[in-house]
Image (cartoon, rainbow, N blue to C red; front, side):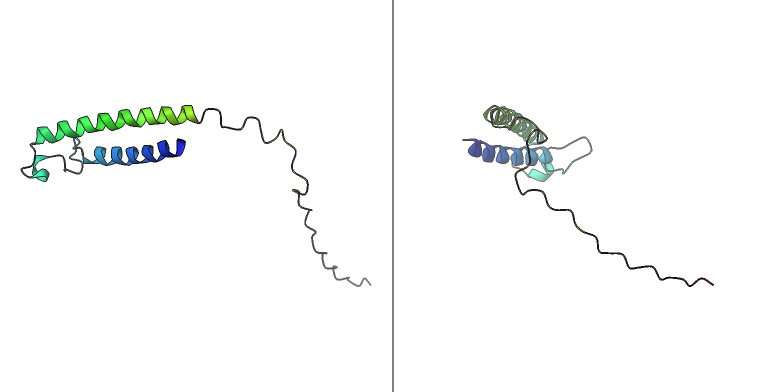
Length: 110
């Protein structure tokens, strides 16, 4: 169940990103939301209304799916700390041994 909701959540997220990028911002954005980019298919106002409504629907679906996934995964987390448990036997590696240092050359004294 959670996997199905997670896949739907991914599709809604990607669609929401795409719809937000299509909208025309004050700076012009991608410019696809304007009437010049759509040709004679829809007017500028109709395109803006469609994108605004689509954004609201996808945003609502995003929040509902997020809450549903949070409620489904509520009891599945492990409690406690990793410091509270003992390491499994044989999990510790022996300390590496360092090679012996070469002997310093002796200096004759007179």
